[in-house]
Amino acid sequence: MGTDKDVASAIEWYEKAAAQGHAGASYNLGYLYANGSGISKDEQKALYWYTQAAQLGHNKAQHNLGIMYEQGGGTEQDYAAAVRWYSAAAKQGYARSQYNLARLYTEGHGVEKDNQEAFKWFKQAAAAGYYKAQFNLGLFYLHGLGSEQDHSQALAFFKAAAGRGYPKAYYQLGKMYALGLGLEINEIESAKCFQLSADRGYVKAQYKLARLYMDGQGVRKNVVAACKWLEKSALQGHTQAQYDLGVCYARGRGVSTDLRKAYAWLTLAAQAGDRKIDKMLKKIAENMVTAEIVEAQKFAEKWRAEITVTADPR
Image (cartoon, rainbow, N blue to C red; front, side, top):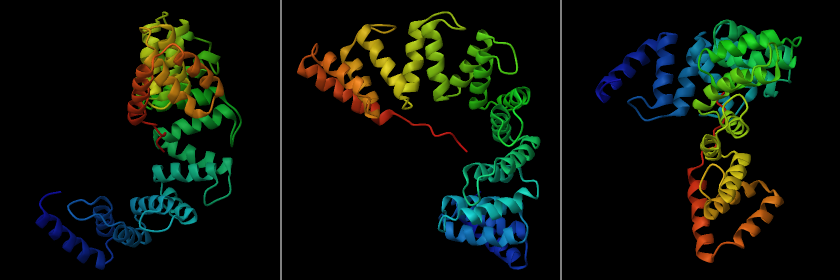
């Protein structure tokens, strides 16, 4: 924003304007304190100034206040308050608040679960072009939640969200092409959609693409490419990918046989509690010397530290 002196001067003028009831000035103060822009981050001050702006009808302040109450930023977590502020902004047409409000109705946080109410708000946010709302509206049409099941509408909204580059939307399109929902089955188009989703880092798509390459479904069979995508999804914490990759290393399928890496990946997969994997580990260990097992355990620790479990962004 500029030098510390510039920020201090801006805060002084914002405070003077806020004291005269200027909602935008109060919002800007809240934003500065919430993000630590040129000043020390202070969530309690951010909450105070967002509240001042929100009470004057500032929709972005209402939205940000909803987020703070939902996440417990600068105050105790309060879903009911989050719903109240999201509702205020949603009624002013603020798409992200409409989406968050729909999500809370879906989850039953701060309100009773109500798919019809969630559908209503997802639909309004989707009409405003918010891609996450378009995606969720597609899911509602796909499963008949809050509305009649309609595969054609689901397809249309998934395509709209995919057009904004949303990886989960490409993944759902891949499933719809694979199953023939709202269109004819097309394995090649399905694989293309999974590829687009996987390229954008979506772990489920990465694993699905690996299986397609392994089986030659919709793509030319390529076990080397399959292992590449298995590793990408395994490093995002996908347990089945970790298991499959371990098996590939044990059998030399798509990769050179390496019992140390096989043992390491199966060790990570075993954390999910599958006793079948424990038996495999014992069998593999019978063909390894102690030094190799120690090295495999180091591999497992290294990869465990590198694993990024990607939570789906709200």
